[in-house]
Length: 335
Image (tube, rainbow, N blue to C red; front, side):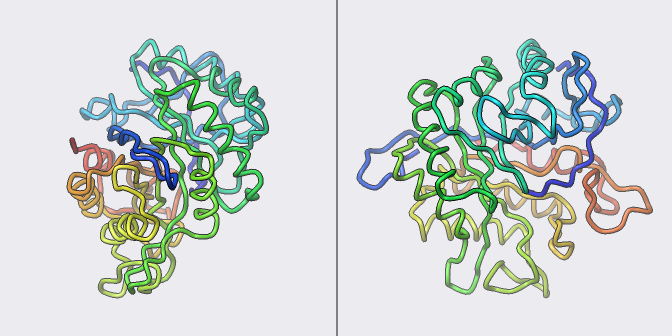
């Protein structure tokens, strides 16, 4: 996932079917809507992360969606010894877990991300990792696995996840992977790493997991990678096509597919995800009964300063789109 978000001041927050071939069915995941927030440059001080820049009221707060889960991004390194942008995992947990639990605010722990690797060589390490962040408000763990990991690392990680699932059956386990959205009939979707992850998941017999497709950064408009309209990738239609391609090509039930969009201007600047695209995703989630919708990132859900050009980690790049517009669109009730 794009890893360019600027980090704001940290202040206190008040506030499936099994796809393993030959295995029996598992219950589909409950629908989850949750924006991401990057925790880089966290500086502790006994305070919790916030969804407000510089401690000021943010459009997300009081919008009616502020009770939705927040996805913390990204833990990296070896499980049990992980860090968050250079900060120790225990420091991040000490400053945030109790505060979120006290506020009744739900959260998801996300690992990996673009240019980072989260590994796990032992069940003991995975258990230390889970226990560090565990509370009644923790919904689950998202494993964002991108090009930097080896097949051996992926396989070891998934085996640890399967063992952890037996110990913590209520925790939601998701795998965030890159995707294309071919509209040329090829059903081209998951890349090699995505296929590696899915194969490892199936070998491990993991049940009730979800695949969280990154519906972003397709590249220059072409039917081999997206749905093309008026010379551009139609981001809403492409996200829907990506879900359909994965469902049809890999036999993944829609109830185990989630979508994560990069709001506004993507890293591939000609790929622009609008509020109308967000509304398209919500309609698709209702129709297909998807497992969830997410967006990158909470900090970008506001307009840019006049001098900002192209993609920016701290704003959407969308002129005339008010702060919180994507939260309001994507946070609409689905089920």
